[in-house]
Length: 120
Image (tube, rainbow, N blue to C red; front, side):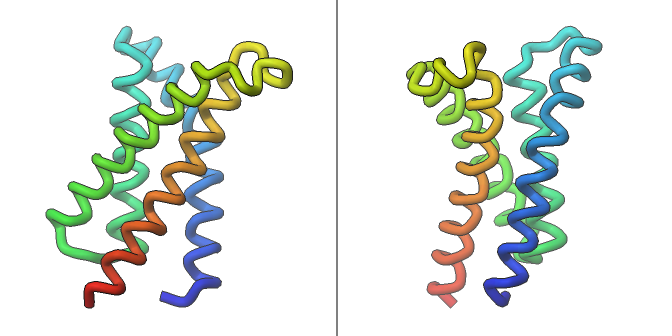
């Protein structure tokens, strides 16, 4: 896949992460579930959509990578927000966690893509 296409796809994925977060949080309030579980499943579904449309790998590899990236990125984003490094700019640290989650997911997808393309 050409780098320009990957950058475009990552930009779309970044925008989807940012725009879907508030919807997923409100869905979690309606369903009365833990927000981390709702966000985890929602981001895993976004990752699955990305994997099936953009990468077109095998079914099992798409599912494993999507779920693993969603879980690890959300975990690291929450831990990064808990460091309170940007509390001066974002007092509730919500934006920090959202942006960190989106950026980490894109970085992890690029790492997985590079590893997979070098193995072939």
